[in-house]
Length: 476
Image (cartoon, rainbow, N blue to C red; front, side, top):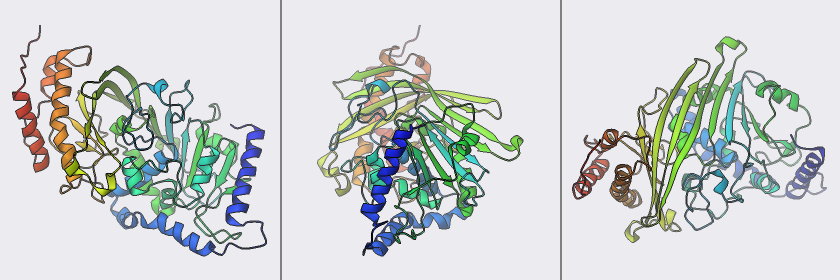
């Protein structure tokens, strides 16, 4: 954990925020305090007003999105344009590379660690807030900076300000404040900071949500170690969410059913773990999803594309079960067509279309395997034998893309060209895809009709383009 000097500097910073921004300890009161509190309350509650109503059915994909997106936003894990991207405002991602290729400004992880995110949900009330269950999230990143702390203590400010190309995060405005959906008192321990926020107005300034309070009592480092494991070194960043009573079942359900393939689209994160700690050890469960290897990175400048192969493993450690699957990733950029431009994406000049070709049984954790991702899974089943990932505009439920959007139609019109290029690369060189034999490659040809007309049009266009290619299958 942090040294005493960094902890002192962090505390002084928090006290300065409280005094200068929220008038705490000053003789005068902030005349806008009530308006500020109401504004943040609206931001936290109204972004997804229907989610709370839908919790009783345990079928809200929007709730899953809010929960998970809020968590990954905390840790800067999502790169909505591409995995391993170097991004500057107004530009598209630079070429894919391994972790060491990441821009130093974007890389939030020490070079000698394997980036990991661990969720632990426990019956221990380590915050002494009366919570029946607490969600603790551990991340081995470099930790929160002063700028990050400043950001979450403001309304509408972000360290990603100006990066409107950030896909759904930029569009939906999801950030740290979304955690108030499930917790009334989120805590953060990182780089010497040990603070908490409260959705109730502070007695010192009549503002809630964004006023940092220093944590002197519970939880302390020893409390946190009882959850993480006393023999392990604590990661740099720890977020603690004492859960609201009516959200416990929903959070447990979403964590236990996290789709394994989500790791394909998280930036930097190589391992995602979920532990459920019950008072009865026999009822505790541990699962883990990890990228065990990333090989065969190729860049093709003539068509502005990259490819690489990921090996994904899912382990249900408490059951002693392991499933594995290899995914060939093809990522290609296309110029946004003028007639497809929309106001929400006016700053975007290129679409990034990723096609994912699974070799073997896809990892699904018992859930249906989505055919379309917009950085997080939709519920669309396309009947195409490959996965499509892009910055699609989605229905408010996030269950499907918007069918009447010219933006989405433009993206889908790029898919056949991307497919033919990827299919040709798979066929021409075993070096590009050493895990794929010739026969399985032909199974990626979309033969089965899609019940969704937009995707059936994609299938027919692929058929036309493939028929125009000179392909002579032969295997020795």
